[in-house]
Image 1 (cartoon, chains in turn red, brown):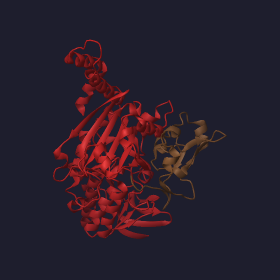
Image 2: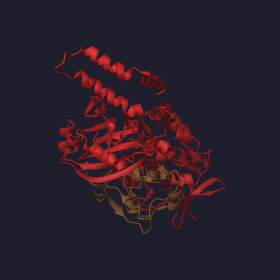
Image 3: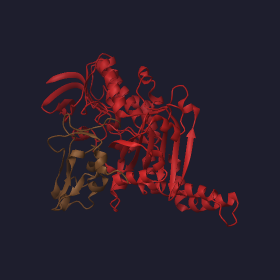
Image 4: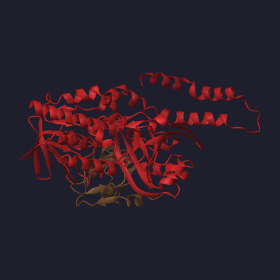
Length: 429
Length: 93
């Protein structure tokens, strides 16, 4: 069996980040990517929080092909026939080095694969790995079709579905309860139109979330990100919520309905749909993170369940890049020590625990449970919108005072047994 | 008028495999399945029943998200990624 020092399964952000670090250290590394190019099988909402990862490979991020730095954050809460949007803009989101950018994976991953190649790693496209080879409990390489390749260490960054790692018994199969479906349209619009519609300075971007009736009460919401000359408009819906519905609403129809809402239509008017994509999103949080390393292998990125949906901030790609970085560090150490057993690779988990990756996931441990509460996606967005609507409504009747109006709505929608219970459960998050 | 789902899929680049990467054990569908989750969770609307009432999947238009696999409790699906150079190739997602 032909053999290399390290095989990386999957040329996405986690795998490429690991390969970059290894190649930089002069190690022999081969990245196997099943798409025509890196990014061909990937989908993001999406936005990358760059700030957490600037310290890893700092030379990369200033020249990365990002779309727009996010200067404006919007959350829209929807009720029947009404909606309320909260807008958060801050100079500090974009001052100096912006904290986050909208991105397109087909561009970003492809570029990163080139950088990895320049460092001396081999990135092989169109190469689907069929099996992780094991011997005496140790991962010793991979099989792709009839070819077998051995490696001292295999970094498994195969993505969220864990087809290989679950077949090899390294991680559990993904469960509906812990995953969501994300799907979107790429809608082309001229840069100037995007900047006018979201009132952006040239080159700057916006991210918008939609909560409420667009998911018909299912866990999830709508999203919209402005790219250079397109927008990503889509939805994320919890799989368990979707599956346990019995009214037969098709997922794809929800997006069509969303797009037809009166608050969305003008945002996408005149745009041309250019691509339609879908992907599974891990949402189980830290409790669903599998064993991160064992004899001869590490798992990184979505395969390791490293993602965090905190309702209005959605992270995963920063964790993927960080996990790739720490994986490379651990593999380098293992090589120096001549020990690529679970013990030799244990530094990987320690580094992740020491870093924002597992710290932030740990802090958010209760969020996935909290998000199972359907009131979050029905009652509250609607109640907020209706409360504000009542304050802004004037008709022929004598009006109650402002505070009275507000108090009446607040008492009805926010002070009852269910909401007090919800508030109590929030203490953990 | 919203764009038809077929028209949306028509925008994507697909390289067709020679063999299906999703195979349905229709016996399981018939005997175990109660909710036909695949039909409504699939974002590409690929699952439908044929004249004989057997579940089918138009795998050629698969976006490879894996939602059907995760949501199929009776485990009626043998689901792999398309081999080698095949399947959907996203350009701008």
